[in-house]
Length: 280
Image (cartoon, rainbow, N blue to C red; front, side, top):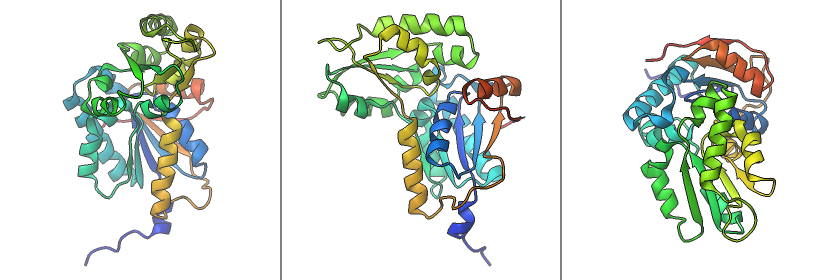
């Protein structure tokens, strides 16, 4: 006899899985926890196989599938958030095919919101080379070509510099890539909106802001992802109905747990344990 399908109330107690190539997805986790304060999360940083943005699609798809299987089998997640622009672009279609009953939310550069609010109609996009070269991104860009002029900048090495907490390299790369994308400002022919197309980049927002000025609007994808996650869970009656005393987030990494702990302390201001994972 087949086991009964999980009831909505039972599923509501299950955690939401979140993964990124490293610590960048912590920016998305922040937005998720703000939107869904009663939920539990399992966060996987695949730092041992990073950076995704400079790897080929075969590598990214394989890692995304392996991590999703781990989260489904080991943690019985009720939804998955792919908190990585590169992994979303390369692998989300395959993940949805392999896990058709699992609500999966991806993240993509915020080109549509940027086009809707830019006054100069000139928009800068900072992203990994993998994201900019993806078919998913090209389709999105083509759909908006008549609405704005998009200045695309592949930021080789920036996500890894942020991941490694290399302040000198991070600042140097931010200076280089913003200069290559400018000029910035509210005047005609200037970039007045900057899309942060990698989940690592919000953690360099202060450095980027110093380069482009206070008038430039920054857009990232964490808040829309959190709202979409809420919508999908609410439609299934899977939202957590009460706060649990269990840890709000279980953290794991395929890289160095001490580096992950330092990143969590630095950006989330929390002291927590990080599990060492071997996901193949």
